[in-house]
Image (cartoon, rainbow, N blue to C red; front, side, top):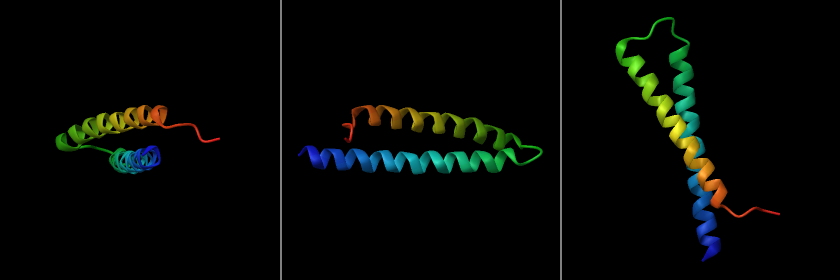
Length: 69
């Protein structure tokens, strides 16, 4: 059962890393623009919050994951 739980935890960490990367990429795209519309400014704030939340979840899950020797 522990191996299944470890595999699920690893999959979730991997999914969150991919999600974090997507948020970071979209933020980078927005920041390349010289001017952001009001909607883009709101999206920027939302993406920063989502990116931080994903990072927090990754760290929390990594702490729960057993250390690999």
